[in-house]
Length: 253
Image (tube, rainbow, N blue to C red; front, side):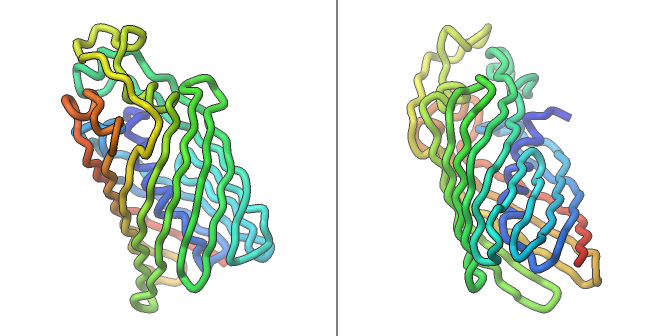
């Protein structure tokens, strides 16, 4: 399984797991389909993983694929704390032109997140910066959603998100030049900082049993601006990025 493919669905899972569920903990495992890499028009099967635990009047930690959040606030409506993220490498992808470019190393990222959960309205922000010299950039993502209790055993959570990326991040993943072209024949392109993407997601959690449940998730992302215009996306990929998957979940109190 190519690690770069796993990242996309892990990020989708991050969006799916953002709401603070009314349980003390939850474990989820499943599979999904996602783009081969950010901007790809190829899709592959990928694994899904989630582990979260709530404790001490609102504090929690959540491991969502390669992303770990720890809420330091003892408050059930507000969250604030550190976040660690592992961004997988881009290497051995299906597209020949992109595969011939130099490998993009895996990145370790650290930052801070904050969230509001009031009357089922979910607002969040996450800031991440590379601490491993892989892309030397940063991203900022804002999210908004609503937790809708359709029935006692079914919860739907639609949401929207927007991501800003710095020049270093954009250059690493979307620029093409003599320093990263490798043997690819893609034309030169310089990507600058800006709004990288906007999107929407939908999470459905069906819990007909006391502890067990089924979670379905779908995420659509549209790459914008310099990310969309990059030949990696415009010539060889697709600015429309769709991911979806299904997990079995286990909850405890």
